[in-house]
Length: 468
Image (tube, rainbow, N blue to C red; front, side):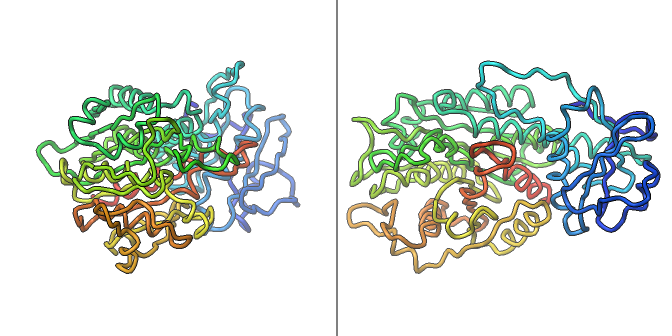
């Protein structure tokens, strides 16, 4: 997509006219129909042809409170109709705020995502030119929207990619290429280095797979010799069979999505670099494939970890918290970030708790919780705080190791996982865990099967912006 900010409308070309519900006065500038069968309801649209034959799309953007979802309205319109747009389309943006213009660009860019990246025949489309008609200068908003939409599409492609392509090594290669292109640092620790540095939990999870694990360290430093403002840690399980505690076959093919947290971390670091934000950011991805093999780690095993703590394995399907434990210990000990956030498609429990409407948020820092929650509601990537009560520490008790990786109880699974992670945070006062299992991957009107949502890139990037 090619985007431009143009001050003057060309009435002979196709145009999108956003319409707030109950406020359609400006429509008379474009069409002469007095009584429209259209009210501006959110994400509805009506196509009208002008006397000169160009298309006019009246796009409903609903009430003011629905502005947080405006990208979805533009995405749906573009997804349904861009096949009719030959070379360009105009967007009448005079009545949109700066943020709404940015979100409109994001929505149009998201409509360009091609989920069928592994089909033998690929659609080749010429780049569409999208002209935002506004007398005010909005090139910055357009540029940021384009960068954001492109990055979200890239991480969706990662999550949707099959595991035979998307190995841990593949994630490392993706990050290396991104770092080179967007000018940040990337280091990939391979098996020998992981052994040397004692990433024992990551190695244990990955030891049953033919595809060896990696740990990816990305660094975007805008302020040399200053502290690290924020550290991100992502769960990068490229396929989760459950290990010897094997999962049922139903929906097992969707376990290619179990690196959704890693995708967010990779995407945020790239986007922050694109936007050249004034922040020092480190992103860690702990990546492995949880496979079934004669070499797989077993229930009942005791493994070590980067922190030095020993862990009794109760369930090999509680593997994500193990790789995150090493990632958290590493980033806190080596980089000492002011704030630490980990993201993971960690538990089915959080889906049973919050459905597909919000991510589970765990932290003991109420200011962080409030800021993240406020941002989430503003951009429609919502989080909801769940407790870290001391009551749940007993669930981590092991007779033979420092702690166990699974309580075995059919209740409070998301909390139990968060309490496990907390044990590896060195009592960091500004740590937050986001369980995104219910929001990173699921049903979509844009695909017939479950697919990646792109949740998290805007949430975390906007949170980083709020630190300044």
